[in-house]
Length: 140
Image (tube, rainbow, N blue to C red; front, side, top):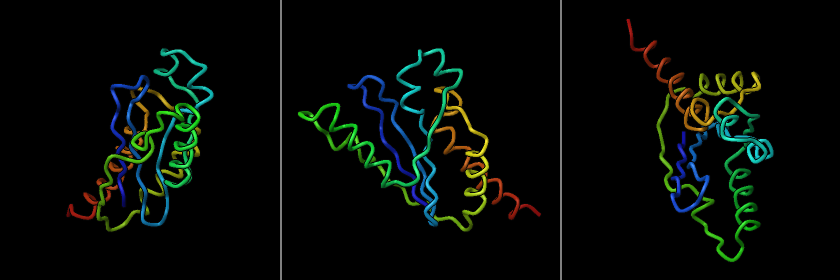
């Protein structure tokens, strides 16, 4: 499993940072606010929940970020806005529980919220599923 981490950039407004997880079988867990809804809404709605989106793969996510960065600031185009600052490899025994959880999660049409259901919260929830299953195996 790979854990991708993009740091927040205090020099850029609306830069919250980002995290995503890629399972060994290719399942990609990356949770974003839907861009159209994010731009068209106020801060209160971002806290209560707006439409969300998920990228199907790391490659798709990076390609979208590259395209957006080139459109926004072609003269100041910065790679650091696109590629993760850190990639952490995590050895796991069975990622099926995480994959199943994420498929079920996406089927609920989840809303993105700044405080309680952002990329970091969704990544944490997926880790909790994995850790819960480890505890089940270890406990007598």
